[in-house]
Image 1: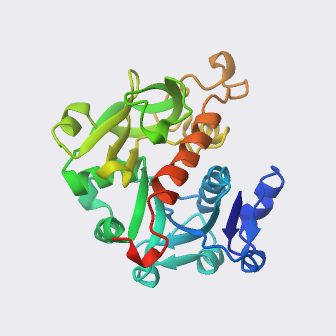
Image 2: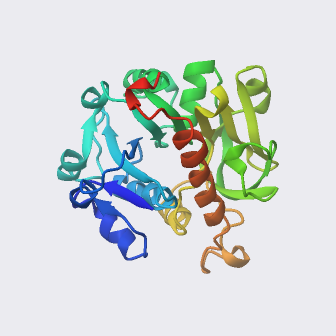
Image 3: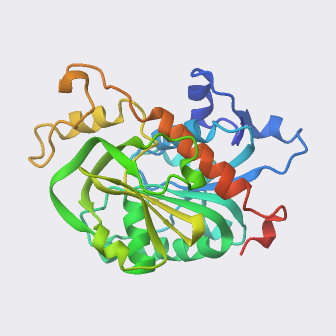
Length: 305
């Protein structure tokens, strides 16, 4: 596909080495095509890693996408160079008068806090509300999924005794939905979280539909407003070694983190990870872009409402 990315974004060179075609802004301007505008609110601490993971998945479509990155005014990232944030990210105030065909809101390392205790909660709530009238379809990932479900529907989150950590098999509950077109009956999703949402709370809300679920990790994907919002409790975007890095980071420092389940070959952390989620991740994002963004968004982007 064609991805329109800011010139000099680190992900460009990383993905070119993976034989993924991307296009910088200079070359993209020579094509007379109305690209789909995607905005990513990146709340993860390692911004460049998350940018690369998401762009890798968004590359799997023949459509031209223009990627924009949003930052918060009420939070200063500690693990990403200031120069990177200034060069590639824009404040919400700079973007609030624009409309977007699609939006992705990532997870954040604040899930053990009450939502109201998160320093940027008020700003995030405002962005969630804005997306409802300025974006055709939005993906909320991990903490963002819990936060949006709580903000819009009052769905609480519950602490886990042990971190939900590993690769878990999910069953598709509505296989006729376009988001699951081409899927098998089951798929695998990485999970890395200390909290969860409960099926019984979600089922009380008529506007919410649980569309994928795991016996081990619980609710996997929730949909609302006919696909204008998707809530993913895990991380389809994770690269093969992301869970390994998290395990190495926490090993010996926390007593609530075990070896990631169903992840290493023979369940041995000395072995390589067994990647079982890559094809489903690519298909999920491709279906989202095609059926819920491209097919639903108006040609005149200002008509989004």
